[in-house]
Image 1 (cartoon, helix red, strand yellow):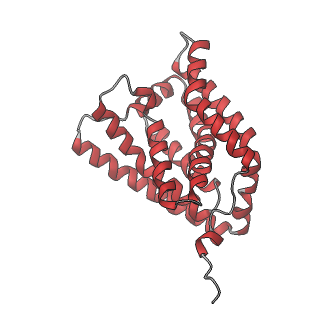
Image 2 (cartoon, rainbow, N blue to C red; image 1 turned 90 degrees about the vertical axis):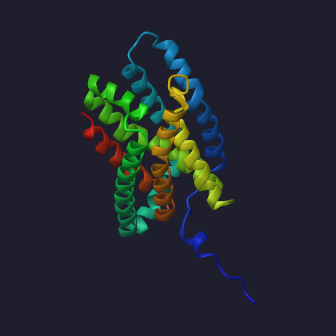
Image 3 (cartoon, rainbow, N blue to C red; image 1 turned 180 degrees about the vertical axis):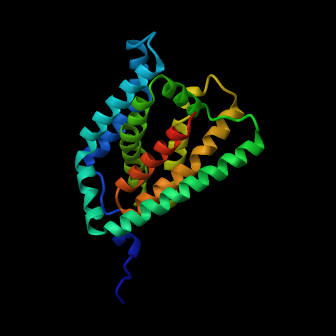
Length: 234
């Protein structure tokens, strides 16, 4: 009796990282998390958070494009083959994420009426200094970096071994990275609520990547949500 084919393996996640991209990606992931922030804080000691973060976003963008350029080019192929499927996934993902963010924000407000996401506060403060520059960074520079690392490197790398594990680990890493810089400044309860606020994004972005078979789906959704968030800030 012939073996049944697994339709999931044939329809999704056909574009993977090369061995070189994987090793370089994990090496840069450490730089992204630890080395680069520490180095920039030393180099730009006394400078504004905006200056440090613009350099951080810019360096990460250049490095990620350099490391994952083949992966990014290959990820355009599924878009060209099934453009309507791609657009549908992006539209559904964007709508789902916006609604999920609204629902989670309402739930967190009920749990703690005084709750404010500390990362959003920091971004809002930098936006007050230069709104256009922050919009450029969050809409164009951040999504390629975070999607290549959290969805391309972590999610896609584990997906072929364990799909559920890929979802769990990528969501955990994505949510955690947004609170790491605040561990010594806020209470555990505040950080936990901030962590929970990023879980829907981690889930929807991974789902959109899986369904569209292209890293550009979560990248576009990520960019659109960041633009909406920036425009909504006062």
